[in-house]
Image (cartoon, rainbow, N blue to C red):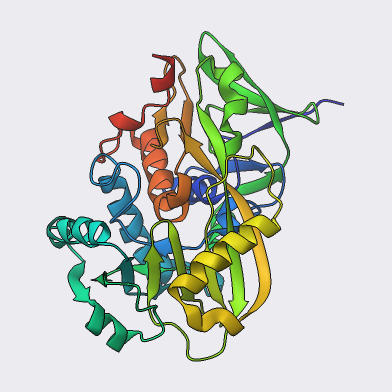
Length: 374
């Protein structure tokens, strides 16, 4: 039998963006309901690498910078708030980074970026040549001709972060409900509620679509083109001999560091394979080959776990963030790609501000959810 429930705001999706939206709404006195068809943090938000910095990614430098900077600042705050409120150690830590160069072209591009990084507050950056690089981390292959060294970056354990955000949100009035949204209820472009696959209807004034790579399901409900597709990524967790790595080391699209669990986390892949979330031996071998080229000392490491997840990637690689055109009460927050963890809290706070205050101090015109329909 169909039942009717109600909430001021319904948030579709229980990843970091959806839960962050609920958290910041609740801190502003608005109690929301999060609808998640699986479990909170069970997809990309729970299996990401968790690196935190505002120095790279689509739209940086550019329109994404202000959102990323806000995200980093909010992570600093959450690192204080969440353990105190929930008792969960989210394993936040300051973590300097090394971005390696292997060719003259790599080194020139890296050196050209230093001036811009130096202009950003909260970061200290310098170029390290090959001899100094070997001094600070001799296990890096001598094929690396140098690196950019940055202080001011950090990392966090993504699943613990989402779990703590969830518990903190529930403690201040947020409801988490299992279900699958199947439609939007509304007339004359005014949101009135959502329907679930259980035939239940939840009445509400606002809906936030934070559905990650599944955001395209909302296209027919909203009447706009939501060009978001899944980008699969895989990570290896290795038990490695020797001392922990003290830096987050990156090269190209890949990375490795020792996490607080004692494992070396190494990745990643960028795979256009639809909604397949299964780890594969091909990805394992590709990641290991790249890793051993850069950190050959890991040849005796033991593979403990391999994970895979789907990140939401838009057609132009920028977020979809803000009010849905043609609708009163509908908002979208998705498409963060590989930057979901660092951007998630900022996307949530921006969305909460749009609902509670009707505005945000951070420019988001470039992220117009309706831009692919224009």
